[in-house]
Amino acid sequence: MKKQYTPEFKAKVVAETLKEEKSLSEIAAEYGVHPAQVSEWRKMDLEKLPDVFVDERKAAKEKKAQEQKIDRLFSQVGKLTTGGYHRLGYIASWQLDQTLEMPFVLTTVKAALRQARPEIMNSDQGSHFISEQYTDLLKEAGVRTVWMARTEHWTPAPITWI
Picture 1: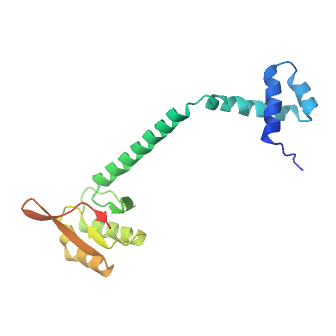
Picture 2 (picture 1 turned 90 degrees about the horizontal axis):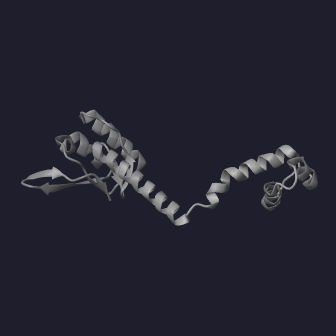
Picture 3 (picture 1 turned 120 degrees about the vertical axis):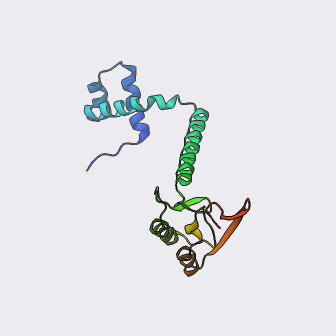
């Protein structure tokens, strides 16, 4: 059966090697551990040593900046395609297309409806969003549609699921 060593024991053995008062073999014999194991623990410890000196505030700030960057990128993906459907600020389904032809739009909406079912659907710009195929699909799913007036024309609002 394989021996289990506590983290405290491993740290004590590694600390002994760092003193460089005894050889690795002597330390291993003293603690009853194979020299290869002591060497491995020392290697692991030295690899993690720089993390001890990390400024936690700076690391947290960098992590937050990275998360914000990821959020911005996801937002940009959503803006690149009107085939992205959001539920409470999260993307329920998205696909990328340059033409936005009706089969693409209907396929994307069906995929989104399989993920989540909104009460109200605001759709992005395009005549296909007021087509019978599109509105019937939403009616069959029990989803109400909302159209927003922009300038002098009635146009769909940005995609939002409530």
